[in-house]
Image 1 (cartoon, rainbow, N blue to C red):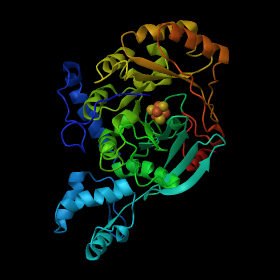
Image 2: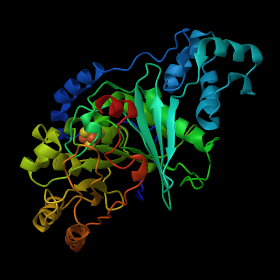
Image 3: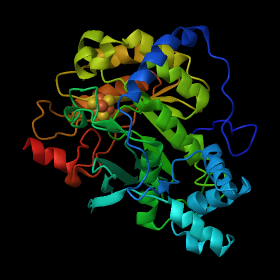
Image 4: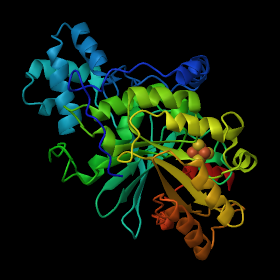
Length: 409
Ligand code: SF4
């Protein structure tokens, strides 16, 4: 997507302060509080090693400064460390050349600059790369790098498993184990950059030219808006101009429609939004995306209409998995065009990627063509997503950790 989102205002390293919420969004506040409280029940373990050293990755700037002050140092040390951690990608305190040796040693006694362990790394014949990352408590997630002509997207996970059980999704068959922490979310992107040696952060100017890992899609395992606090913290770190410096127009967050949190996500982060729609009738969407029973299509589309900053230059992406004989008729295409009227929208048509044990089949090519022609005639851009990394089970909806596959086999 080529999206011209406004740049953060105020302190140049931080995103803009939230604007006031609309009346509809305010109505959601109580439910949002309930969702955030529930999310805390699946909190990750402390980011501390058995020897007591703490991981600096995932701390906000303020938290990092507080750690420095607690050591009797000046807060500006946090700025130096931030540069080394997120701009240089350095993990060894002894190589931080503008920090005096005694302080380097003090840092090494108290802290680490962590990464998830790489369990496995597989590269597809089409260049897609998939990692199984392991965290300190042995939990695992998958992360995928998808190279394209004009970009390279890293698809990151936000939960181990998922609560939502979308019926076409392999990940949805792995029950939610826990949320990932901010360190584990940022760590996936940093480890992916380690794998390609993309440090220090390329500085190609405004549009980040020259980056191999140029985009992030928060579309891997889990529902990001059910782990919003950690996702928010991680994305603020990733967008910080003095570190990884990936702009919000290069980040797309995909949700299955957690309406009460969509508003606040738009206000606070302003990243691109993708919505897993997959059906145009509530009775069918209730089956494909069971969250629909809570937030039906009309409420979801109303939240899309009020998502901040949406325009023709900055469209919402609607994901639509093409399932043969289930949701792929011409009538459904016409209804989709009607529903999206007035929303600056793009529809990603995703031929279903089969996985062991699923009952669905991919739509026939001629059916996908007819469906897309109807949308195009209604003025809606609707690229058909080319399946990537099928040989390594890295395609959309196929992520599931190997250990879980083995456990169920
Ligand atoms: S599509 Fe997303 S939200 Fe639905 S089960 Fe799969 S990972 Fe969870």
